[in-house]
Amino acid sequence: MDLRLAIKQKAQSLGFTFAGIVPAVPSKRLGAYFDWIHKEYHGKMGYLARPDRQERRQDLNVILQGVQSIICVGLDYATHSIPQEIATDPSRGRISNYAWGVDYHDVMTPRLKELGDWLETQIGDYDIDHRVYVDTGAILERDHAESAGLGFTGKNSMLIRPRSGSYFFLGELLTTAVLPYDSPNLMPSCGSCTRCLTACPTNAFPNPYVLDARKCISYLTIELKDWIPWELRPLMGNWIYGCDVCQDVCPFNRFTQPTKEPDFYAKNWDYAAPPLLELLTVTADSFRERYKNSPIYRLRRNRFVRNVCVAVGNWGSIEALGSLIPLLEDDSPVVRGHAAWAVGKIGEKRGKTAVLEAIKKEADSTTLAEFQRVMTTFFNK
Ligand code: SF4
Ligand code: SF4
Image (cartoon, rainbow, N blue to C red; front, side):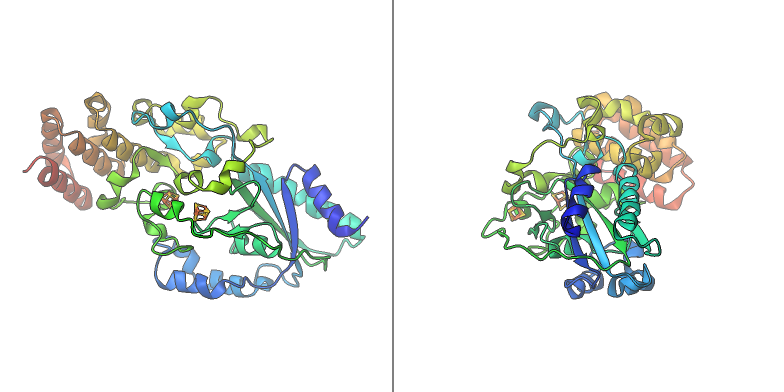
């Protein structure tokens, strides 16, 4: 059988939804990427701007000496849609669909390794070298997948497959083997549609196809390690891990079929959109127990509770004060500060008294400044 087809069949037999093969040449959008870094749209993801990472993007040989080919694979993750009344319930935290199940790295990485081992046997060369990437390397993976004819780049900067949408993970097998390649297909485009650009809650697209990560809820809830900018907190609604808005509104996602991967389904809707109150009392141990197999585990407890505090502030219910006030004495300064913001947003006398008490005890200067800002902003003091 034709090797190109055999590789695709093997990828599908391993559970991947699709695969494409391209020569290992640098992305044609490298210039736009460096411009994006230059404008500092990457925010505090300093690793993206590191000289060694930039070098790897320009020359894939730095990642794998003698690399010739990239096999790009995709795996659908969209499950059944969350019921609207649950998604819009402000007393629940929203989690991006991709994180409802087990960690995709754990699902995809062994399969890509198996694909690499199989490739060696197929071409009868055990000296070929390969390297596997799942969202961890310095690779502009969407561009390579686009070059392989697997989709087109939408104005929301996602790779879109015309007949199935954008809810999929990408992974790559870099190999020193020379392979038969795919070529870009004739693709549709966004045309005059601007739905994603206008639907974004934080206005994170300065231009079509350009994402200012510093404003994106996915960055704020996952990548950003410390303080979420005040002006963005009210815009985050009840998202506590990622955000799906610019994909949910995309007309190409009307064609999405639920994934066949059972591991990506939420155990129940309380997992996809958990009640916020129970998350405010999460400890390091209970967080580990709850999320140890999930991509959410990477956040660790403090960043997660920080996000929950913002969602609770946006909910604004006095029901939450009883669980928020103890967090003003949390071990994490970031949790203390965001809890104070949520207390201020709720705005009850009991909350004001609690923040005033917390000010007397606060030793960390940044957190103290947060507390004082809460007093002046929400309690006129
Ligand atoms: S993920 Fe959400 S916040 Fe980020 S760009 Fe898309 S709609 Fe905006
Ligand atoms: S919502 Fe419209 S503009 Fe945005 S990616 Fe989808 S088709 Fe393109």
